[in-house]
Length: 451
Image 1 (tube, one colour):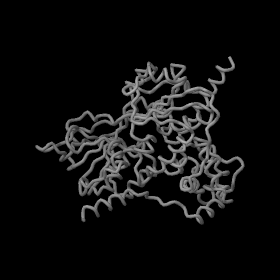
Image 2 (cartoon, one colour):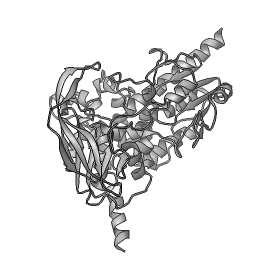
Image 3 (cartoon, one colour):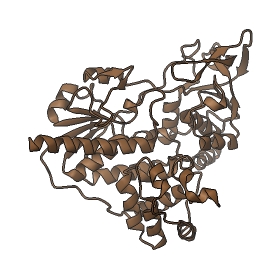
Image 4 (tube, helix red, strand yellow):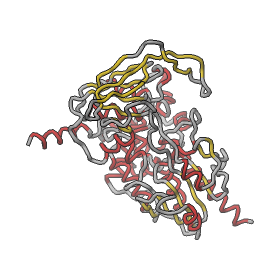
């Protein structure tokens, strides 16, 4: 009985942390909007959602029209209403920042898309077939966005997804208490309803060759995102209790909750959004103490400000200018501690950020039971090279205007084209790139038809 209750408590910990607006709250908030003619919030949205329009439709009770306005511009608009850094984007640009408080654009976007989700609203229809086939490798935000637009243009679209379910980062990589899987699944269904075939559990280059997939389709879109967390390259990484942050978060979203973290000391290495997710998940799994170790300072951290504040509210401790040197274990092969060294910032590196330099004789040991690695992600180098595409350390080179790769038949978008310090690798940016790829691919097809 106690075990059942403990698991129920764990499940409650992973329920969505932020409640949506009530009907009354949504209408009142919508009526605060000034419906600016030259709205700066639109300019600040990477997908250019007509924000005043969708808010005005909420105020007038046209919720289906509001949701369609949002989803037309952003095929993963329901997810983005929960995970976008709105205070840095649309809400940050709201004119009301100068006099009162900005419109709660993200919450209103969530309100409208939640209505569409709960009411099974049909928002889009497939276009008349043009006889052309497009294969999309990767069913995350970029791939889904490209598929949705191409289906509306009349293409026969097949998505090849390596995981059990499509949705990519939204389905597996963002913690449930910020983005439940049901939201991502609904967005996937919106795409499926346009006659898009989604083949899951299929790894291109392994389950199907690149030659075969190229022969099957007139065009290909590479939207595979990134791969696993790289090794720390320190002693002790093979000990029991050392985890890849991506797989760790994925396990919590897949329902494999357990009590093994209760009361444990957890260290997360890294200070990006995934590191924050690993830390806040650990708290919800009952960890006794959770620390984030980062070799630079707060100013260099890549996590969003709201993520950082969320983690602090959860009681996560941050250790700046701290780098791991080795992970210590016992005779049973279990983690017992981590040896660290203090750092100081030196001269800027190639990416413009100051490089951390070890402080001599500053080593110390932290008692720890679990180590979660969150120091970025590796690239799908093998797949990229199988396609013979030009790249730079796994970052696919594209024409910045058309998203075409070195192979004119293949386009690329999303994380696979983002390099270090180049672009904003956000869900909303990936969605916009997916749209743009579809438009440029369709334009290329039209150009061929004319010739």
